[in-house]
Length: 263
Image 1: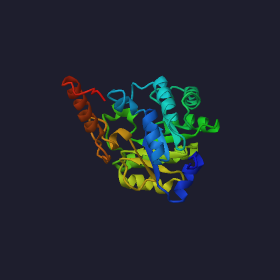
Image 2 (image 1 turned 180 degrees about the vertical axis):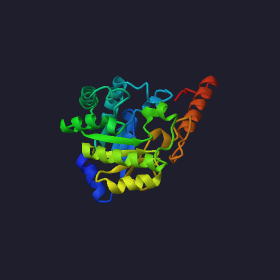
Image 3 (image 1 turned 90 degrees about the vertical axis):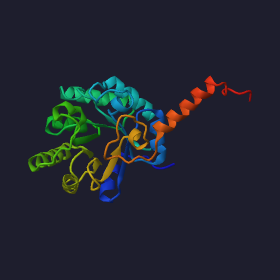
């Protein structure tokens, strides 16, 4: 059996020049598939609100939902590092909330680390959690919980002042103790600047090829989400169509008396 991936091992991968593979999972089957395929980090993303629960965005996802799905994923993962997203308003109101809810994701959900969005606004919470032994992954750029503030899912840091702000917040998060940083929907040259500046690994999604690793939503790469295909995704399968065709065939067979058969 392959060796278990730990937080220190993820950090070491950057110095060794090894790319870090991150994939979302939302339940036992997707967790098991990702783990057995050899991904380094399984992210239980609050994106489950859209791809699994049918919400318009991640805002309606609650702590109870995240704990439930994290625990299901954990039952399918034996080797990868499990990182769970902290949902909207689970860490913004107070440092105490952040610590308590991160603890729930680890204690009840079985996560090994948590991820939260933002820079300076969450620095105090990050620092406190890390001091208490809770590993934290940061997230800058297009932070989906701020979708209404941004006016949609848009590239961030295109202009130099915005790019400098993101770079400064990346440095701040590193100082606060995050072990890795997700960069979502930022220009490739900015992601390169941040990656070269930080000692911790960067994980890109729609941020080009210069990051230390990549994260994708499993339903996007499998073609199992019917609403849209993000530009930063490559489809490795078309499961939605295959599943729809199979179910249609089952419906036809039952109605025509072709299923079940005597055998």
